[in-house]
Image (tube, rainbow, N blue to C red; front, side, top):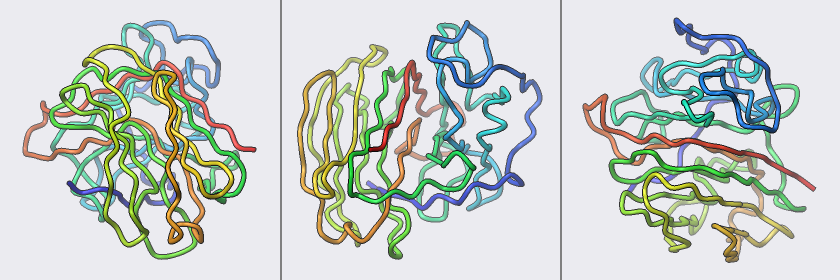
Length: 257
């Protein structure tokens, strides 16, 4: 299993023009009306989207402004039940440090710059979602390393397996290697909730459907800053454009204190 990836900084020039992209309101806390443009149900002002299209090694990105303006396409859209939906086929453009395509949000600051926060303090990302389909496994949430060194690894990845198991992968060190921790089980297609975060500079906190576990932060990560990611980071690759992972989010929020 390949884990971790680098993510390019926000780039307006990399945004794809997709026929059928609509306009709609950004922000909001209620469920979007079926068929509404993404952004009505979840505040997208602090997120950049990466999609499995673009040039080899350079996936297309979509800025927070475009997301709030109603951008949607085959990989990112509001489904018939109002969910913000991510589709990542097994065939797609990947980052240079990953073998797997993704349709995934990357945390940014209010001015559009890349989020890059220290381990000190308390940082949380909470979501309610369901995995609609998955071939092998899909990563639905990450805390990823930012500045502070040369590693392109995540601090942690939250995986949903094809059999319904939910597994937390914690990176052993900034050099690589991942330890897997079972943290839940939910059948494919059913809603569930998670919170991933760090506190006190040295503790990983993970809650899945109300059950919380804690893990230590390895010393090699403590020089790094971090950022959140959420969506459908598929963990399988092939020449198929129909097999892949589809993940529907009903709530997504980040807090820092």
